[in-house]
Image (cartoon, helix red, strand yellow):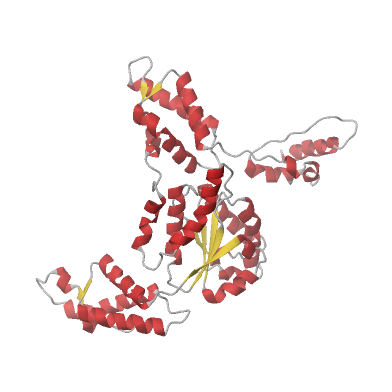
Length: 412
């Protein structure tokens, strides 16, 4: 089959530059397949000017809604008040959660309208029944709100995490261009890619999960959860392997219209062959597909300079944000939050000693101190010290039995 296809393409390429023929060629196909098409003959790319390459994007939610309403009207149905009011929300969610590889645009909406019409007609006896939410079957959940209705609401989750208040400013920066494009009615290019720099345990991975949720809540991106990958898993073992691995992850993030988080990204800069190959493969797609996915590189402070030096395109594509070490008060609050989460309590005497430990941890900190991770390790060791003391306690309230005392506090 491939031989026959190649023969057709070869004949076409020759004819396109033959002066005895006078015709115009228009080729059309799915975006994901057209790159393979142009590789079938080395003469194809030179015969199609890039300015004549037209990318037809998926229909936006308002267009999808109009197509659906027109179908329902032609089917002589009416929409119930709750469906009529919630339809915009439904199609915003449908658009955001669509399968970007297989979404059929108008074709899918016509199919949806037929399914809804059939459900309404089977349910109701009247000739022109009213469409209810129940007629949408398994997709009825799309009528529910797609997240926070205001930016302030979207920030509420940030208050649960200690030391991440600065994310609000980071997110405001990301939202400014989105708001500007919406106000001007011009195309939004997508959020900027970022490098998050900080020592271990400063909340970078937690922040990545929050970022995806914030983007989803405000409509910047459509994926609820980030794609998180450790850089070491992207370093291949033979030529072409790294490119394949990173492209698979970029495809996954683009498919879900979400954030691609690469943890310990500096590992890519240390491997001069396969690691660098992975970074090289990312650069063009980070520009061309910025609306489809957002990249966050997570890098330790000590590794930042080597990381950006490994590829000349990183700095021009990414904005740096710093995650500072937690101060003693923040470390103490993290300790208390971990206690609350595990339903432990802490006596005043024990808490006073914990504060001193946090001050010492901060004073003697290095790039490997661990911040919140060090606090979690301390809490684990304190439980181990407490076990012998409480093992034989009987008929003691849990808030007393599982209260840390001064003798349980240990050095980090």
